[in-house]
Amino acid sequence: MDELKKRLKEFLKIKNYSVHTISNYERDINRFLKFLQENNFEPEDLSSPVITKWIISLRKNGLGNRSIQRNISSLKNFYKFLFKSGLIETNFFEAVQSPKIGETLPKALTPEDVEKLLSFNPKSLSEIRDKAFLELLYSSGLRVSEAVNVNISSFESDFSFVKVLGKGQKERMLPVGRFAKDAILAWLDSRSKLDSSSEALFLNKYGKRISIRAMQERIYRVSIIQGLSPVSPHMLRHSFATHMLESSGDLRSIQEMLGHSSLSTTQIYTKLNFQQLAKIYDKSHPHGKKENKTNNI
Image (tube, rainbow, N blue to C red; front, side, top):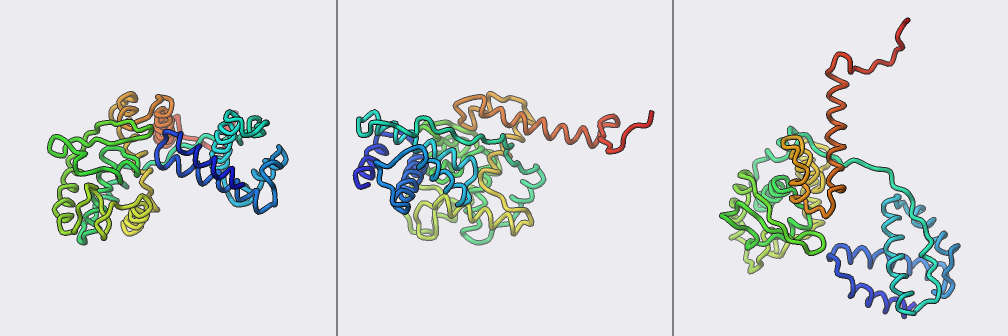
């Protein structure tokens, strides 16, 4: 077991992934190693039945198909590394099938709900920061990790553009809307009251770069106060993409702004858009309204 943990550190070092992805790998693999220990399995006991018991344990612990699929993917990559390194003779994970994931459309706020969310009048230092954070997420379609890692020096052209580092360490330049710019400048004015030498744009009360978890909780809090159902940072990113698509129809540009490596990833928003159009049609068109009763002939 100690040897496996040592190899895990080697495996994580060679992966050129984001900090978030590396963290997922480490958590997933350590969860599996803990399962082996708790069930008195030695690493050499690994077999298809043992892997099946592990997957069942994930399900019993409340993990859904998507999380189970990620766990399996992490272990497949790890054991592929062990096999190629000559550390194991048989890779039992090679034949493991992941559960199918039903296609889920992302949740997006209506423009009215976005307006309601962003309409609060910030008074405290933390609220001024939260306002700037929310405006930037919606203005530029950032991932929460990208927004947290924005530095003051990331902005160009008088805060009209922001440079972010996305997945795969890929940089992209994004426009910043007027409302977001005003909110950021207001935050910078208040931020100067904090005793901090950090380059990070968004700071906590200790003058350190704020964490992803902290901002998720802050956005949740703001949404509840504003009379909305709980809002996540990713919902604002989805809302940005959906509203942009409804206005422009330019899928390729939206792909670039979101930082998607494949257009197929961005195409999920066309399905979301068409779903909304179908609802409007069913509700509004005289021959589109659905009826439960059958026609009399």
